[in-house]
Image 1 (cartoon, rainbow, N blue to C red):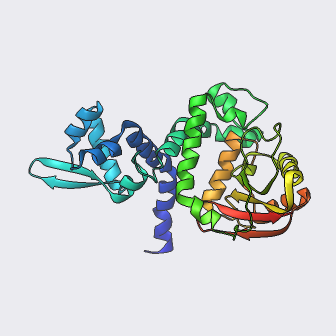
Image 2: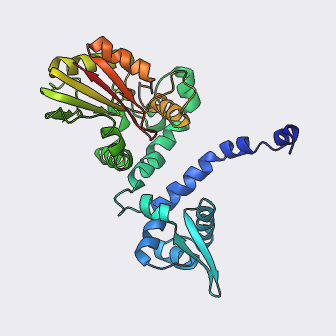
Length: 299
């Protein structure tokens, strides 16, 4: 096929245009419990049986199941009794609630919170601020506090973060030899107002990307003052390329920071600059090739 013919059939554009349709299929199948039911059943089921057990229409469920087959989240077998559906391995591992590597909670957070905020992405770009007030009627001077409409939503977000950590945490913690640090503090909570206890190593996992540069410098200075001499800080973040040409996932995360917080994703050089401004030196950067990377600074 010539390049002109390629332009006459813009497959990439069409795929990008329908990307949210794929997300909603996954969101809906998880919410309704399709993957959990098929795992628990221990055998393939018909669309009628699945619809009956989950309390949905047969017509709607059949189309949802077929879409999941197209996404390779389900497999289908045609028998004399009709089509029978079962989970694929990837669904058993990542989409069922009972799996140790389940991504169910983060998927539900994206469905119920992130997706609604992204409806106002154009407004976020125009105004340069998060869209919680438009999406949920929440007005707050604290963007991080505004991330949760309720304690239940906060717990779902935390469960979602834990699920992501289950598939990328090992790579981040193995990025550097941390054996010399015997007293480690995983920073969380209201760290701008609460005191930070003394420790040898502080882990700031997906924290700095929530905040603008001024707030980051303020927090890192506070960590530096609490840190024991010879100690350090480990930043766990998704790093942009230095020319910000990618990775695509990180670019999209940065857009999400725009609609949900006051922060952004950064390059390794930008994080290094923030660390140096707080007093940290001997800065090392390790790209894991997974969702999150590691930056280590020492006092």
